[in-house]
Image 1: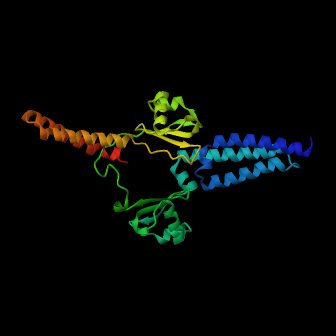
Image 2 (image 1 turned 30 degrees about the vertical axis):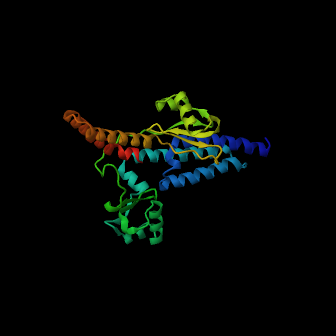
Image 3 (image 1 turned 180 degrees about the horizontal axis):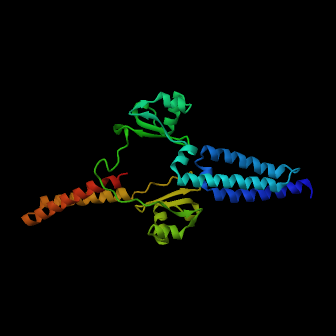
Length: 286
């Protein structure tokens, strides 16, 4: 076999074997690497190149070494799942960098981090002031996670004592100008509804690159023609306005009628609707 043809065959075989072994090792090999997995990744890459190009050596020896390294990595991962001590030894443990708002300089030195490195890691978490940080820890994979002080944390509905309903994931109802019927049905709508929504915003289906329907039934579209400005969905704003109008009408009725019983009824309904508006306002104004 000619050299160039042998290189092609070896490369194809190496790619197939490497793909199978990578799938066997799992997604962690491409996301969160421990020290051993980092070494394994480099070694497997080197072995694959060796199998492809070293024509003077037997290619099957490289495959054996590749399989052994992969099985060793798989065994280490299995050991990590079964034993915390093994996890701590192989992956190491997280190290606290900031505690109670104070930077722990000794721990920074142990992780070979400078104060500038720490500031860079905080900025990656959208934190620009050390004074705002209550707690920060460097995880075994090298990422720094941050807990802000109470006064600097974003306000959520739970902080305000407001209960909100679960929000489902947006459904991609249009892809490349084609309607995705399954996704549309999952959102609880059909083609007739979708075409009506497109007519409201004056957009043709074939010009839609991406269309999503959210929990509230609002349709977001991205067009092929970026010069066309698509109006923002107004369903929630319209619903909020309708509720306020109904509440105002009830209050007006309670003031204009002479019948005492009817006046009390309209007044009570107005108060109840006002409470409903206060409860749904966070959902309809975001």
